[in-house]
Image 1 (cartoon, one colour):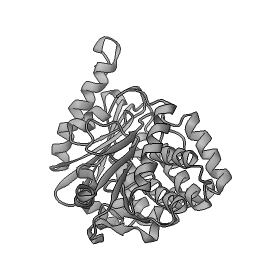
Image 2 (cartoon, helix red, strand yellow; image 1 turned 90 degrees about the horizontal axis):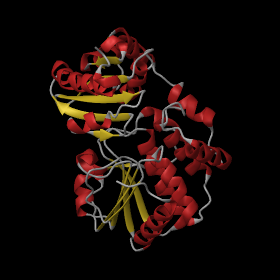
Image 3 (spheres, helix red, strand yellow; image 1 turned 90 degrees about the vertical axis):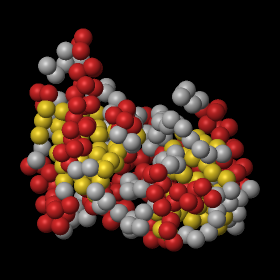
Length: 343
């Protein structure tokens, strides 16, 4: 996939605007188990369309039956998101944000398939997209960056509510501007959002300083299980359904636990596994060096970015670790001088 130029992005923005103009009912949805970029981008795009085209019927969907994760419920519009299983209509236009369609739409897959037109706005690399139109720019730090630039293309002033949602999208997907994807574009957009009404302190208080006591007990258990391999360059931990029952933590609170493992000094490749309903294991992969963990995630049926990716597979913790760990070791050793790293 080639590098997207500014001119090409503007052209695609014009095409997307044209499709929106031709549609009356519009459904917007992100991926299953949504993170801050997924929720923030979906809500901001809904609000943007409502401001620019006030007569359109726009709904932001949740791909799962679960509620909006607790830490994102402060976002404007979160309370009016609709579960896909309750939608019960055919949309003129379905817009995927932070995902390129497929199984990770979960219960929204049927709505996506039945929609008259389908559009993708995403920043994840893709192998194949089944859509009428797509704007996928992996160089963007977050899908929220692209949504903000879409507003600029349309000449729509950012409302404080849009700014709050988009700031959440960008801040969370850059790990509070600490990850490798925190580039100058992300900082410039963040500055615009703060000027438009976003509050970094509000984001911090709700997302990063808002842990339940049950979550902190869960975090302590995960910290106690951290194991390293390859001289400390691979760090791994996990959580179980029994942990959730014992601590009272909810599944959506597990999303940040990969960063607990990521904080191990000297680690380059990070793996966090958690048991989820249905006899599945959800894995989070992170890279602190120039290693492409997305390739491993794809091999395991998932995807993501070079430095941050994920997957969900059937099996138990031991089985999934036995699948993933050899791949991480090969990736680490293959990246070393003359293949000697990690010996």
